[in-house]
Image (cartoon, rainbow, N blue to C red; front, top):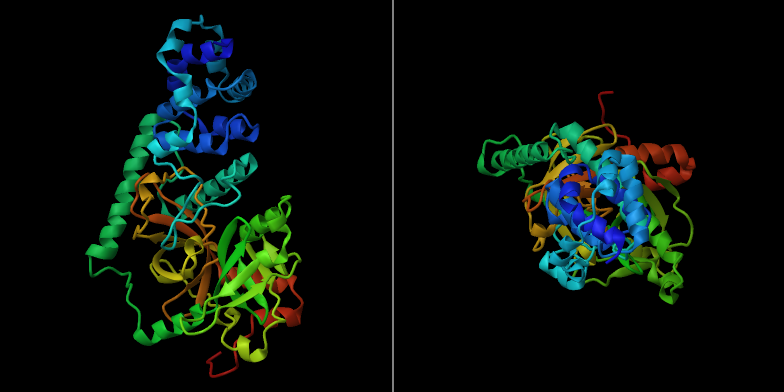
Length: 450
């Protein structure tokens, strides 16, 4: 057995007790390629208790080489130098190594199955649990980016909802925090579903349902090699989706795979009805007409040349229906293609609104693998990313972006959307006047008291 393995096995208890803040260590390990994306997820899924995560991390590192150990030591030097000095000075006890089979601790397929782990990080917003393309391929940079994004969502939810979603450093504090989050969820569920006097009304007028379903015809599935998402028509030849969706498509074009080089494999499809032919368009190979990483939106052009005006009349651009009227306690209706499957509808309650974004809670949990989710694992909705959110009058108020489970086995998801009024305001500053008005037509003049 190598010396570094003996050091790890000798000090496994000490490391587990004295490494309460494991996040920065994990981030450093994966950024340096010392652990894989699957191994990162395995540590995160093992338990919400920091000591158990640290224990699993030691077991994984003990199956690796000296280089990986050196990366771990460098991380401790930055994040916990006292612990590093302790384990390096401790006498090596080779006898402890025989008690554990290193091979058994490797992150194998059988281990993932026993742990009920998904192949990739997964999320839920609309019914369905979409896989996370590009990230699950073991991309350390991708996982690290998603971790940062997830923390931003959790910080926004904490600010708007007044409940702490970021993992606590201390084990006792973390246990107490999880209890508060569970209580918060149960109180919300009781208020929304068990109390019929609740201020949140999920009912919708029958006539408005027809309006929403008609506008839902303009929601499309976006596909590219290795991934899928949702978007919707704005303007005569543009679709709106998330900027991170475009980033994934752009990354796919950089891979040296023949299928990734074919333009017909980057397409959007509108599913009109069971009796009408689906309409598919390829994406014009150029950068977004307008985009912003902070708002997470991108306007992409589609090639409409093969269709005539009569064909396109079945699709109603949605840019003219943008509304700024969204407040806490209201309800939104999301329409999208989770996991690239059939178009589905989900009702969500708005729990917080700031200048540009919203935080909603989806109380239903229709996901077969919900028990595998953890509140601290990155959970992007690449199947449902870009789904439009309508209010109960059919006005377009937000675009779904991402979300997470607040704790393992939660019955609800915390979800983020970007306000379409903010997207429109940003696009107005970046687009030529005529192009902007094609995408976001001004309201027709009519009766007003102004």
